Image (cartoon, rainbow, N blue to C red; front, top):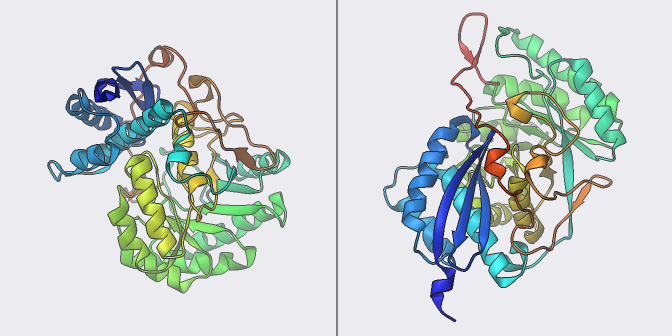
Length: 392
């Protein structure tokens, strides 16, 4: 069989609303889709994707590992926007390979370890009452875990913030207790801290939350502080989850080598795509750490996460985002970006079934680029009462 039929004929960057997709076509007429996860710097990720597209046109679409290395190593200047573009392209190339061979991508990754994936429901809310209502709704819909629940809430950026040390600890304890009472004793709570704390605050809060048995405490510190994250993890019994902002396997290796992180939050659309996520899963498996793929994006991202999750032994749970449409921090009832794809998995009793369609199993609708005007997130942060920037 001639290799010419596997050559890439075009690479397009599609900026659709808050999402950035790669659409790659081959001379044989196949189309593959991927998604970039750098939504905060979507302009830069699009420019990188278009630059890599010029390299890829005319190349063999089958050489996924080769292209993955070239794109990341040719200049040794990396970062989230670059990694997001690489991720989108990598996912699309895997999608193409699965379609060409008429098998799902998970089959190419070694077959399925499981055929269903546990998912957790997503909560975005500005008030405690709204959080509790969403927790109850998700429990009633059959979810066995509720995540993205923040004891400091998703308050507006324009609202200045101040809490004393004891106030932060008390807020966390009282509000997580309210979360627990809302869902009952059998639903897991995945507590999100959005990098807001310092190590002393994280340890104090982790200790008071222990009796409430949260499944994890996510990103209590900014992720670049590897040593301090390890120290926090060793000082508390609530498991630490982190990694959603890591750009590739090397950062995960550095964090996992400390031995205190229990859940690796690999962003498949940031960490190097399916290729990068599989490498990260292997690193985590060697440390007896579970993988919980991060996904605040569209069904294309979810589909890519599913291909990895079903093929690895150390999968824990999958993020299933409902809300954040048009970058508005508000919960919804459908999968984020559901209108942009021809079909998407719907949870039943807290699980989604892994598709067996060729490629990643999800297709963008025709002319998707015309469905939503591009959205851009301006550079802004919330501030404390003294004018200092606040992570949220």
